[in-house]
Length: 272
Image (cartoon, rainbow, N blue to C red):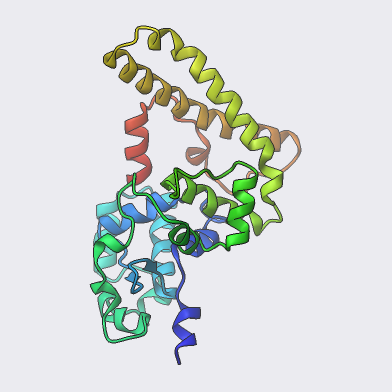
C-alpha cells in the first residue's frame, strides 16, 4: 500500500523531464509561478516538496499547450480551468488538489499542512545537498559528477537555485544520452561569454562606487538577456543547415526577443 503513492507521484524534476521534450523552455521557476497564480496546486510531501500526480501533469500540459498554441493570457486559461476546460484525461478523475493531499503521503498529517518554510520558495533560497537531490530527482553519484565537471557549484555546504536548474536540465538531457562530461563545451562557451560581458562593463566598474557597480550589474544582465536568444537562434540556424527540422516550434517561439530588458524578460518568462 505504501509503495503505490511513491510511484504514482512525481517530484518537480521528474515533471520537467517528462515535459521538456514537448516544451523546451519549461523551467522550475515557471512551474512555481503557475502555482503562485493558482493554476496548479500540487500536493506536498511531509518535508514540504511538491508532489505531482498524473492529473497535475495533464493540467500543466494543458496550460502550456494552450499558451503556446492559442497565445491566451493566464487569466483566461485560469477561467477555462475553473469551468472544467482541461482535457478529459485530467478532468475526469481529478478532485481538487487539496482533497487529494491525504492520499499523497504516509501518516495522519496532510502533506498540504507541512510548514511552508520546509520547501524552498524564494528565487534566492538555498538548498542542502539532500534537498537538491530530492528536488532535482537525481542521485548522489550524478550530483558528484556534475560537481566534478564544474556544472554545479556549492556555496559553502549549500546550493543555489541555479544549481537546481542545472541539475534538472542535465537530468532531462540524460534521457537523450547526453552525459555531464559531454557538456564541458557548453560550460566553456558560458565562460567565454561571461568574459565578454566582463570586458564590456569593466570601464564602468573602474569608477569604484556603488552606483557604478549597480549600473554594471544591470548592463551585464541586459547583455546576458540578449545573448540567450542569440545563442538559441544560432543553434537553430546550424541545425537547419545540417538538414534537421525545427521540431514543430512556432516562429513566435523561435524569434529572438532582443529588445527586452532583463527584468521584463524575466517577468515575461514567468507569465508567458
